Length: 428
Image (tube, rainbow, N blue to C red; front, side, top):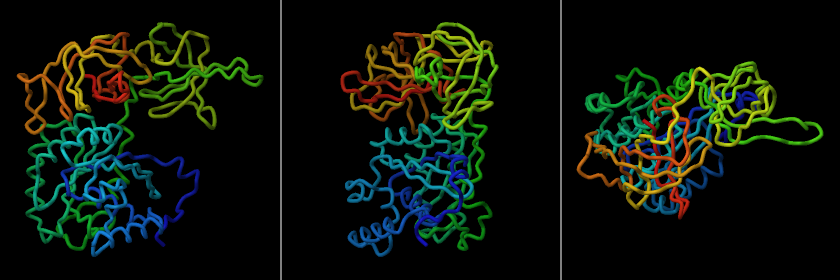
Protein backbone atom coordinates (compact mmCIF):
# COMPACT_ATOMS: atom_id res chain seq x y z
CA UNK A 1 0.00 0.00 0.00
CA UNK A 2 1.56 3.30 -1.12
CA UNK A 3 -0.89 5.77 0.40
CA UNK A 4 -0.50 6.58 4.04
CA UNK A 5 -1.99 3.96 6.34
CA UNK A 6 -4.15 5.03 9.26
CA UNK A 7 -2.10 3.89 12.21
CA UNK A 8 -3.56 6.12 14.91
CA UNK A 9 -6.82 7.82 15.82
CA UNK A 10 -7.57 11.52 15.30
CA UNK A 11 -7.29 12.19 19.04
CA UNK A 12 -3.93 10.42 19.19
CA UNK A 13 -2.73 12.44 16.20
CA UNK A 14 -3.74 15.77 17.76
CA UNK A 15 -1.98 14.93 21.02
CA UNK A 16 1.26 13.83 19.37
CA UNK A 17 4.54 15.63 19.92
CA UNK A 18 5.53 17.87 16.97
CA UNK A 19 9.10 18.12 15.69
CA UNK A 20 10.03 20.83 13.21
CA UNK A 21 13.27 20.17 11.38
CA UNK A 22 15.15 21.72 8.51
CA UNK A 23 17.59 20.35 5.97
CA UNK A 24 20.81 22.11 5.03
CA UNK A 25 23.99 21.51 3.10
CA UNK A 26 25.65 22.33 -0.20
CA UNK A 27 24.13 22.02 -3.67
CA UNK A 28 23.52 18.43 -4.85
CA UNK A 29 24.25 16.91 -1.44
CA UNK A 30 20.90 15.12 -1.67
CA UNK A 31 18.62 17.07 0.69
CA UNK A 32 15.47 16.71 -1.42
CA UNK A 33 16.24 13.06 -2.20
CA UNK A 34 16.65 12.31 1.50
CA UNK A 35 13.28 13.87 2.31
CA UNK A 36 11.70 12.01 -0.61
CA UNK A 37 13.16 8.75 0.72
CA UNK A 38 11.87 9.54 4.21
CA UNK A 39 8.35 10.18 2.89
CA UNK A 40 8.41 7.16 0.55
CA UNK A 41 9.71 4.62 3.05
CA UNK A 42 7.34 5.75 5.83
CA UNK A 43 4.41 5.42 3.37
CA UNK A 44 3.61 9.12 3.72
CA UNK A 45 2.83 9.79 0.05
CA UNK A 46 -0.25 8.89 -1.94
CA UNK A 47 -0.39 6.74 -5.05
CA UNK A 48 -1.23 9.65 -7.36
CA UNK A 49 1.76 11.63 -6.02
CA UNK A 50 4.11 8.71 -6.60
CA UNK A 51 2.67 8.15 -10.09
CA UNK A 52 3.22 11.83 -10.97
CA UNK A 53 6.83 11.63 -9.77
CA UNK A 54 7.41 8.43 -11.77
CA UNK A 55 6.07 10.08 -14.93
CA UNK A 56 8.15 13.23 -14.36
CA UNK A 57 11.25 11.08 -13.78
CA UNK A 58 10.72 9.29 -17.12
CA UNK A 59 10.31 12.59 -18.96
CA UNK A 60 13.62 13.78 -17.49
CA UNK A 61 15.33 10.58 -18.62
CA UNK A 62 15.99 9.18 -15.13
CA UNK A 63 16.40 5.41 -14.97
CA UNK A 64 14.77 5.25 -11.54
CA UNK A 65 12.20 7.25 -9.58
CA UNK A 66 13.63 10.67 -8.70
CA UNK A 67 12.36 11.11 -5.14
CA UNK A 68 13.72 14.68 -5.02
CA UNK A 69 10.76 15.73 -7.19
CA UNK A 70 8.47 15.19 -4.18
CA UNK A 71 9.80 18.42 -2.68
CA UNK A 72 11.10 20.36 -5.69
CA UNK A 73 7.74 21.80 -6.67
CA UNK A 74 8.72 24.83 -8.75
CA UNK A 75 9.20 24.37 -12.49
CA UNK A 76 12.60 26.12 -12.29
CA UNK A 77 13.64 23.67 -9.55
CA UNK A 78 12.74 20.64 -11.63
CA UNK A 79 14.42 22.02 -14.73
CA UNK A 80 17.67 22.82 -12.93
CA UNK A 81 17.54 19.93 -10.46
CA UNK A 82 18.03 22.27 -7.49
CA UNK A 83 15.97 23.66 -4.60
CA UNK A 84 15.31 27.41 -4.84
CA UNK A 85 12.51 28.15 -2.40
CA UNK A 86 11.76 26.59 0.99
CA UNK A 87 9.49 23.57 0.57
CA UNK A 88 7.46 22.39 3.56
CA UNK A 89 6.30 18.80 3.91
CA UNK A 90 4.25 17.15 6.65
CA UNK A 91 4.15 13.55 7.79
CA UNK A 92 3.63 11.49 10.92
CA UNK A 93 4.60 8.17 12.42
CA UNK A 94 2.93 6.48 15.42
CA UNK A 95 5.46 8.25 17.66
CA UNK A 96 5.57 11.85 16.41
CA UNK A 97 4.34 14.47 13.90
CA UNK A 98 6.87 16.22 11.67
CA UNK A 99 7.12 19.44 9.69
CA UNK A 100 10.07 19.42 7.28
CA UNK A 101 11.60 22.55 5.75
CA UNK A 102 13.63 21.63 2.66
CA UNK A 103 15.94 24.62 2.19
CA UNK A 104 18.21 25.64 -0.73
CA UNK A 105 21.92 24.92 -0.80
CA UNK A 106 23.09 27.79 -3.04
CA UNK A 107 24.84 30.74 -1.38
CA UNK A 108 22.45 33.20 -3.07
CA UNK A 109 19.52 31.50 -1.33
CA UNK A 110 20.96 31.66 2.19
CA UNK A 111 18.06 33.91 3.19
CA UNK A 112 15.65 31.09 2.30
CA UNK A 113 17.66 28.76 4.53
CA UNK A 114 17.35 31.26 7.41
CA UNK A 115 13.58 31.43 6.88
CA UNK A 116 13.19 27.66 6.96
CA UNK A 117 15.42 27.21 9.99
CA UNK A 118 13.99 30.02 12.13
CA UNK A 119 11.29 27.82 13.72
CA UNK A 120 13.14 24.49 13.64
CA UNK A 121 13.91 22.33 16.67
CA UNK A 122 16.50 20.31 14.75
CA UNK A 123 18.70 20.71 11.68
CA UNK A 124 19.91 17.97 9.35
CA UNK A 125 23.14 18.95 7.60
CA UNK A 126 24.02 16.76 4.64
CA UNK A 127 27.54 16.23 3.34
CA UNK A 128 28.46 14.54 0.07
CA UNK A 129 30.82 11.71 1.06
CA UNK A 130 32.93 12.39 -2.04
CA UNK A 131 33.50 16.07 -1.24
CA UNK A 132 33.62 16.20 2.56
CA UNK A 133 33.13 19.36 4.61
CA UNK A 134 32.77 22.35 2.24
CA UNK A 135 32.04 26.07 2.62
CA UNK A 136 28.25 25.67 2.61
CA UNK A 137 28.48 22.98 5.30
CA UNK A 138 30.17 25.48 7.60
CA UNK A 139 27.82 28.30 6.57
CA UNK A 140 24.68 26.33 7.33
CA UNK A 141 26.02 24.86 10.57
CA UNK A 142 26.92 28.38 11.73
CA UNK A 143 23.43 29.67 10.87
CA UNK A 144 21.89 26.75 12.76
CA UNK A 145 24.02 27.67 15.76
CA UNK A 146 23.15 31.37 15.42
CA UNK A 147 19.44 30.49 15.34
CA UNK A 148 19.89 28.47 18.55
CA UNK A 149 18.85 25.16 16.99
CA UNK A 150 19.86 22.84 19.79
CA UNK A 151 19.97 19.54 17.86
CA UNK A 152 21.95 18.81 14.72
CA UNK A 153 22.23 15.59 12.71
CA UNK A 154 25.19 15.39 10.36
CA UNK A 155 24.34 12.93 7.58
CA UNK A 156 27.24 11.82 5.41
CA UNK A 157 25.26 11.06 2.25
CA UNK A 158 26.07 9.16 -0.96
CA UNK A 159 28.03 6.51 0.90
CA UNK A 160 27.18 4.15 -1.98
CA UNK A 161 29.45 6.25 -4.23
CA UNK A 162 32.48 5.66 -1.97
CA UNK A 163 31.81 1.93 -1.54
CA UNK A 164 30.48 2.47 2.00
CA UNK A 165 34.03 3.19 3.19
CA UNK A 166 34.28 3.66 6.95
CA UNK A 167 37.53 5.69 6.69
CA UNK A 168 35.81 8.28 4.48
CA UNK A 169 33.02 8.67 7.04
CA UNK A 170 35.45 8.94 9.98
CA UNK A 171 37.53 11.62 8.20
CA UNK A 172 34.44 13.77 7.55
CA UNK A 173 33.27 13.31 11.13
CA UNK A 174 36.67 14.42 12.42
CA UNK A 175 36.75 17.50 10.15
CA UNK A 176 33.27 18.59 11.22
CA UNK A 177 34.12 18.00 14.89
CA UNK A 178 36.96 20.54 14.54
CA UNK A 179 34.63 23.18 13.08
CA UNK A 180 31.63 22.52 15.33
CA UNK A 181 33.74 23.00 18.46
CA UNK A 182 33.48 26.77 17.73
CA UNK A 183 29.68 26.65 17.60
CA UNK A 184 26.98 26.65 20.27
CA UNK A 185 25.23 23.41 19.33
CA UNK A 186 24.57 21.20 22.34
CA UNK A 187 23.55 17.93 20.68
CA UNK A 188 25.20 16.56 17.50
CA UNK A 189 24.49 13.14 15.95
CA UNK A 190 26.53 11.60 13.12
CA UNK A 191 25.34 8.96 10.66
CA UNK A 192 26.37 7.58 7.24
CA UNK A 193 23.47 7.26 4.79
CA UNK A 194 22.57 6.79 1.15
CA UNK A 195 19.35 8.68 0.41
CA UNK A 196 19.20 7.22 -3.08
CA UNK A 197 19.46 3.61 -1.93
CA UNK A 198 17.74 4.06 1.43
CA UNK A 199 20.67 3.05 3.65
CA UNK A 200 20.11 4.14 7.30
CA UNK A 201 17.29 6.56 6.40
CA UNK A 202 14.29 4.56 7.57
CA UNK A 203 15.75 1.05 7.54
CA UNK A 204 19.08 -0.15 8.92
CA UNK A 205 21.73 -0.66 6.23
CA UNK A 206 23.31 -4.04 5.58
CA UNK A 207 26.09 -2.34 3.61
CA UNK A 208 27.68 -0.65 6.64
CA UNK A 209 27.95 -3.24 9.44
CA UNK A 210 30.68 -1.08 11.00
CA UNK A 211 28.06 1.60 11.88
CA UNK A 212 26.30 0.67 15.12
CA UNK A 213 24.22 3.84 15.51
CA UNK A 214 20.52 4.44 14.88
CA UNK A 215 18.76 5.28 11.63
CA UNK A 216 17.72 8.81 10.72
CA UNK A 217 14.01 8.16 11.34
CA UNK A 218 14.67 6.57 14.75
CA UNK A 219 16.72 9.62 15.79
CA UNK A 220 14.01 12.02 14.60
CA UNK A 221 11.35 10.07 16.47
CA UNK A 222 13.27 9.93 19.75
CA UNK A 223 15.27 13.17 20.03
CA UNK A 224 14.19 14.99 23.22
CA UNK A 225 12.93 18.52 22.48
CA UNK A 226 10.63 19.30 25.42
CA UNK A 227 13.45 20.83 27.46
CA UNK A 228 14.36 23.16 24.56
CA UNK A 229 11.63 25.58 25.63
CA UNK A 230 12.08 28.13 28.41
CA UNK A 231 9.87 27.03 31.32
CA UNK A 232 11.35 29.51 33.81
CA UNK A 233 10.69 33.01 32.46
CA UNK A 234 6.94 33.58 32.06
CA UNK A 235 6.15 35.48 28.86
CA UNK A 236 2.71 35.92 27.27
CA UNK A 237 2.60 38.52 24.44
CA UNK A 238 -1.01 39.52 23.86
CA UNK A 239 -2.10 39.02 20.26
CA UNK A 240 -5.74 39.93 20.57
CA UNK A 241 -8.31 41.08 23.14
CA UNK A 242 -11.46 38.96 22.89
CA UNK A 243 -14.75 40.70 23.73
CA UNK A 244 -17.70 38.76 22.24
CA UNK A 245 -20.31 41.07 23.87
CA UNK A 246 -22.97 38.46 23.22
CA UNK A 247 -25.83 37.49 25.52
CA UNK A 248 -24.00 34.33 26.55
CA UNK A 249 -20.60 35.99 27.10
CA UNK A 250 -21.67 39.54 27.87
CA UNK A 251 -18.89 40.30 30.38
CA UNK A 252 -16.19 38.09 28.87
CA UNK A 253 -12.77 39.70 28.37
CA UNK A 254 -9.96 37.38 27.36
CA UNK A 255 -6.45 37.84 26.05
CA UNK A 256 -5.39 35.53 23.22
CA UNK A 257 -1.82 34.69 22.33
CA UNK A 258 0.94 32.12 22.47
CA UNK A 259 2.87 31.22 25.61
CA UNK A 260 6.48 32.12 24.79
CA UNK A 261 7.96 31.10 28.12
CA UNK A 262 7.26 29.85 31.63
CA UNK A 263 4.23 28.14 33.14
CA UNK A 264 0.97 30.01 33.81
CA UNK A 265 -1.73 28.65 36.14
CA UNK A 266 -5.07 30.02 37.39
CA UNK A 267 -4.45 31.97 40.59
CA UNK A 268 -0.97 33.15 39.55
CA UNK A 269 -0.18 36.79 40.21
CA UNK A 270 0.78 38.51 36.94
CA UNK A 271 2.00 41.89 35.75
CA UNK A 272 0.92 43.64 32.54
CA UNK A 273 3.53 45.57 30.58
CA UNK A 274 3.85 48.46 29.85
CA UNK A 275 1.11 49.63 32.26
CA UNK A 276 2.63 47.93 35.32
CA UNK A 277 -0.79 46.94 36.72
CA UNK A 278 -1.00 43.61 38.53
CA UNK A 279 -3.79 41.05 38.69
CA UNK A 280 -4.34 37.31 39.02
CA UNK A 281 -5.09 34.73 36.37
CA UNK A 282 -8.79 33.88 36.54
CA UNK A 283 -8.82 31.10 33.91
CA UNK A 284 -6.88 29.74 30.95
CA UNK A 285 -8.72 28.27 28.00
CA UNK A 286 -7.87 26.51 24.76
CA UNK A 287 -10.13 25.84 21.78
CA UNK A 288 -11.61 22.83 23.54
CA UNK A 289 -11.71 23.45 27.28
CA UNK A 290 -10.32 25.21 30.35
CA UNK A 291 -6.87 24.00 31.42
CA UNK A 292 -5.00 24.03 34.72
CA UNK A 293 -1.64 25.14 33.30
CA UNK A 294 -0.29 26.65 30.09
CA UNK A 295 3.22 26.00 28.82
CA UNK A 296 5.10 26.99 25.65
CA UNK A 297 4.27 26.93 22.80
CA UNK A 298 0.53 26.64 23.58
CA UNK A 299 -2.01 29.04 22.07
CA UNK A 300 -4.45 30.05 24.79
CA UNK A 301 -6.97 32.63 25.96
CA UNK A 302 -6.24 34.03 29.41
CA UNK A 303 -8.74 35.78 31.66
CA UNK A 304 -7.67 38.01 34.55
CA UNK A 305 -9.57 38.78 37.73
CA UNK A 306 -9.32 42.54 37.19
CA UNK A 307 -10.25 44.62 34.14
CA UNK A 308 -7.00 46.41 33.40
CA UNK A 309 -5.84 48.21 30.28
CA UNK A 310 -4.22 45.57 28.04
CA UNK A 311 -4.08 45.62 24.24
CA UNK A 312 -2.28 43.91 21.36
CA UNK A 313 1.50 44.18 21.73
CA UNK A 314 1.42 44.24 25.54
CA UNK A 315 2.99 41.41 27.51
CA UNK A 316 1.79 39.51 30.59
CA UNK A 317 4.65 38.34 32.87
CA UNK A 318 5.30 37.48 36.50
CA UNK A 319 6.04 40.46 38.82
CA UNK A 320 9.29 38.93 40.11
CA UNK A 321 10.57 37.88 36.68
CA UNK A 322 10.37 40.64 34.12
CA UNK A 323 12.00 40.92 30.68
CA UNK A 324 14.47 43.57 29.63
CA UNK A 325 12.86 46.88 28.69
CA UNK A 326 14.41 49.42 26.37
CA UNK A 327 14.62 51.18 23.03
CA UNK A 328 18.34 50.71 22.26
CA UNK A 329 18.78 47.06 21.32
CA UNK A 330 21.84 45.11 20.10
CA UNK A 331 21.01 42.57 17.40
CA UNK A 332 22.70 39.95 15.23
CA UNK A 333 21.04 40.48 11.86
CA UNK A 334 20.72 38.17 8.84
CA UNK A 335 20.15 40.50 5.92
CA UNK A 336 17.59 39.28 3.38
CA UNK A 337 17.43 42.14 0.86
CA UNK A 338 19.40 43.28 -2.20
CA UNK A 339 19.69 46.82 -0.81
CA UNK A 340 22.43 46.97 1.82
CA UNK A 341 21.73 48.01 5.39
CA UNK A 342 23.39 51.31 6.29
CA UNK A 343 23.63 53.45 9.46
CA UNK A 344 20.67 55.82 9.66
CA UNK A 345 18.36 53.51 7.75
CA UNK A 346 14.73 53.49 8.95
CA UNK A 347 12.58 50.37 8.99
CA UNK A 348 9.44 48.89 10.43
CA UNK A 349 10.10 46.37 13.17
CA UNK A 350 8.03 43.45 14.47
CA UNK A 351 8.73 41.76 17.79
CA UNK A 352 6.32 39.11 19.14
CA UNK A 353 2.93 40.84 18.63
CA UNK A 354 4.28 44.40 18.75
CA UNK A 355 4.78 46.63 15.70
CA UNK A 356 6.88 49.79 15.72
CA UNK A 357 9.55 51.65 13.73
CA UNK A 358 13.29 51.82 14.27
CA UNK A 359 16.48 53.43 13.04
CA UNK A 360 19.89 51.79 12.56
CA UNK A 361 22.10 53.64 15.05
CA UNK A 362 25.32 51.73 14.43
CA UNK A 363 26.83 48.74 12.64
CA UNK A 364 29.33 47.06 14.97
CA UNK A 365 30.83 44.44 12.65
CA UNK A 366 30.14 41.85 9.98
CA UNK A 367 30.80 38.11 10.36
CA UNK A 368 32.93 36.06 7.97
CA UNK A 369 30.73 32.97 7.95
CA UNK A 370 33.54 30.67 6.80
CA UNK A 371 36.08 31.61 9.50
CA UNK A 372 33.67 33.13 12.09
CA UNK A 373 36.03 36.16 12.30
CA UNK A 374 34.72 39.71 12.77
CA UNK A 375 35.04 42.12 9.81
CA UNK A 376 35.29 45.67 11.10
CA UNK A 377 36.71 47.50 8.07
CA UNK A 378 33.66 46.88 5.84
CA UNK A 379 30.49 47.81 7.69
CA UNK A 380 27.95 47.56 4.87
CA UNK A 381 25.86 44.43 5.33
CA UNK A 382 24.41 43.06 2.08
CA UNK A 383 22.20 40.21 0.93
CA UNK A 384 22.80 36.92 2.81
CA UNK A 385 25.38 38.54 5.11
CA UNK A 386 25.30 38.51 8.91
CA UNK A 387 26.42 41.24 11.28
CA UNK A 388 25.91 42.92 14.63
CA UNK A 389 23.96 46.19 14.73
CA UNK A 390 22.46 48.64 17.23
CA UNK A 391 18.91 49.86 16.66
CA UNK A 392 16.70 52.41 18.41
CA UNK A 393 12.96 51.78 18.42
CA UNK A 394 10.17 54.35 18.58
CA UNK A 395 8.59 52.53 21.55
CA UNK A 396 10.05 50.58 24.46
CA UNK A 397 10.26 46.83 23.79
CA UNK A 398 9.98 44.00 26.33
CA UNK A 399 12.50 41.37 25.32
CA UNK A 400 14.94 38.65 26.34
CA UNK A 401 18.16 37.63 24.68
CA UNK A 402 17.61 35.19 21.81
CA UNK A 403 19.84 32.71 23.58
CA UNK A 404 17.49 32.80 26.56
CA UNK A 405 14.19 32.75 24.67
CA UNK A 406 13.80 32.39 20.89
CA UNK A 407 10.25 33.75 20.95
CA UNK A 408 10.92 37.01 22.81
CA UNK A 409 14.46 37.38 21.48
CA UNK A 410 13.72 37.56 17.75
CA UNK A 411 12.70 40.48 15.52
CA UNK A 412 12.15 41.14 11.84
CA UNK A 413 12.84 44.38 9.98
CA UNK A 414 10.42 45.51 7.26
CA UNK A 415 10.87 47.92 4.35
CA UNK A 416 7.96 50.31 4.86
CA UNK A 417 7.80 51.25 1.18
CA UNK A 418 7.54 47.71 -0.21
CA UNK A 419 6.36 45.80 2.90
CA UNK A 420 9.15 43.29 2.29
CA UNK A 421 10.86 41.55 5.19
CA UNK A 422 14.47 42.69 4.80
CA UNK A 423 16.15 41.40 7.96
CA UNK A 424 15.83 38.66 10.57
CA UNK A 425 17.39 39.54 13.91
CA UNK A 426 18.44 37.80 17.12
CA UNK A 427 18.64 40.05 20.20
CA UNK A 428 21.95 39.76 22.04
